[in-house]
Length: 320
Image (cartoon, rainbow, N blue to C red; front, top):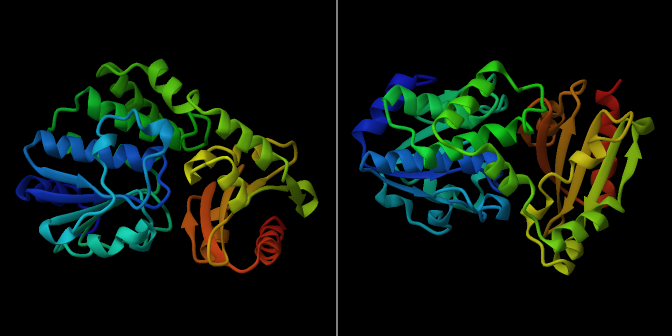
C-alpha cells in the first residue's frame, strides 16, 4: 500500500507491538515525530518502543517521552517497524538490521528523495515537517492529542521550518502549530528549551568552528569545518553542531552554506543549506545522500581536501 493513510491507520489500530525509529543524528522533526507517534500509540494501549542509533540532542531532552528512547533492542518481538523522517532505511544507521525484523514496515516521511521503501508509505514532499504527517495520522485515527503529544508535534514543525523562517512555512504548518498551542503548549517555554539552552562548551566550540570559515564559487558558497579533535577538546557530541551551518548561510552574497565534519575511517559528513536558487538535494543525491531542496546531506570517503574539492566543484556547476 503506497500513500494510503486509511490503511496505515487500520494497521495501527489492529497491531499491538511497534518499533519506531528515525535517521541518524536526529533533529527536532525526527525526534518530535517518533515521540509523538509512540506516545499516542501507548495511549491506545499499544507497546511502542523508540529505537535510535544516536542520543536525543541535549536541547530536545525536555520533550515528553525522550527519556524512554532506547539504543539497543531486538526487533524480532515486534509486529510493525515504523521509520519516520528518513529518506532510506540505511539512514537509520546501526539499528537498521533490527528494523528489518518485524514483518511489516511503515514509512512516514516528507523527503523528496525518499525511495518509497516499505509495505505502507505516507510520503508527502510538500509537507513542511514529518510531524505534520504524524498529526494527520493521529487525527484520522481519532486519537486524543494531549499536551505531551502536542509538544512533540509543535517542535517537529517549529524546527523544520526554522522557527517559521524557511520557505516551507506553509499555511498548514502555521495551522497545525496553532492547533498545538490551543491544546495547551507554551510557545515561549518550548522556544527557550530548543534555542536558548546551551552549554559554555558548545559556544566555545562554535567559536572554533567559525574560525574555519571559508568561501568558494566567488563568494556564493561559504563553508565551515569541524575536526574530530575539535569535538574531543570540547567534550562535544555531534548534536552540539546543530544550527552552526546557519552562520555561513547568513553571509552576504552566499547562496549555499556547507558544513564539513570529519568522521572516522576516512569519511567526511557534508551538510548543505541553500537560500533557494540551488537544489542541494540534487547535489547531495549525486554523492549518495539526499534531503530537501534547501537542506540536504551526504557522506563521502576520502581526505578532507579531496572532499572539499569535489563538493565545491559540484556546487560551482550547480550555480552556473
